[in-house]
Length: 176
Ligand SMILES: CC(C)(COP(=O)(O)OP(=O)(O)OC[C@H]1O[C@@H](n2cnc3c(N)ncnc32)[C@H](O)[C@@H]1OP(=O)(O)O)[C@@H](O)C(=O)NCCC(=O)NCCS
Image (cartoon, rainbow, N blue to C red; front, side, top):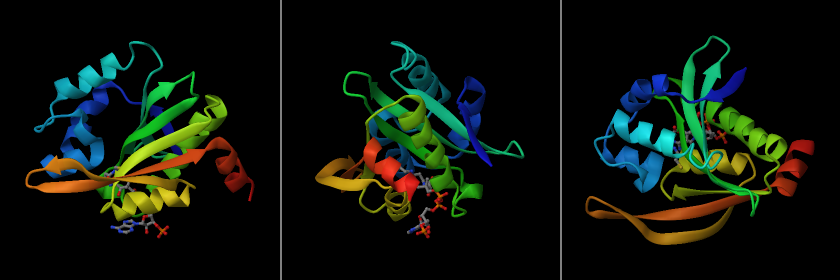
């Protein structure tokens, strides 16, 4: 069993340990944070996102044995458009490739679509991030667009894919 709980200040040091370098930071978090990642940056994000309340919700994924295995976020929550963005999806190194990414996101989608009654979720993923793309496709996300050269990292330009999932499609998928 995997449950999602609010990510708190106490979870920051562990999260920082999971981000080894500048490239990984961009892959995981986009341009939100600067390398080297510090506790202050995460704290700032955590605190700013509670003002105005409800614009972002940050979770940690915890196993039945109380092992924290990842984090995920619903960002840019827009009550008028009834939409949000899946952001900063991370399964910690020791727990990858065991299906936990899909399970963590399954819980997140239930919160977004059932509890919060959102209608649409979108996300950005770099085109080389096959594990993440596979995970999102499993959950029903579809590719909507490719942004060529969306980010520059050192001397490279990375392409970003926009993926989205509507609540009706998700409900159809869970009913099957
Ligand atoms: C993306 C991530 C969250 C996936 O979590 P995970 O627990 O390792 O993934 P799962 O075990 O649930 O596997 C999901 C699917 O990806 C596949 N997969 C895993 N690693 C893969 C790889 N390196 N290449 C291709 N597919 C891969 C799995 O086989 C599975 O698909 P399948 O069921 O069809 O076999 C995790 O790899 C991660 O934290 N990555 C680093 C941070 C990141 O890039 N976040 C996403 C930002 S958009």
